[in-house]
Image (cartoon, rainbow, N blue to C red; front, top):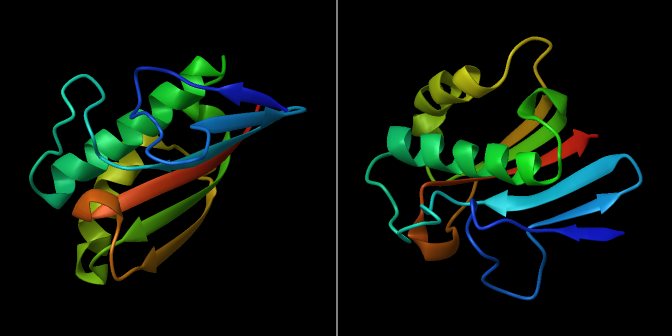
Length: 123
């Protein structure tokens, strides 16, 4: 196992790694929509989806790979009514064949953000 970290995604706020490389796989911890340079969380679900997915993309790049190699994502959202809006932003980051995905509504997320995205990547 090898720990992967970057200052282009939010630092871990607990006892976990931003990502772990194991063999030819990368397991990315959930990325919340915090701008890693400013610490600011943007307003609104569209802006938060953009920031969270940018953080995922940057973390994958730090491992020497690209978002095109994502095979599975999990999206945690605060309100299932935001599903269509999140899909619209998600489709800007992923192309066919789209990664497998789970999307679940949760009661609360760190820093009270509106979504969190984790990814599994084949390197």
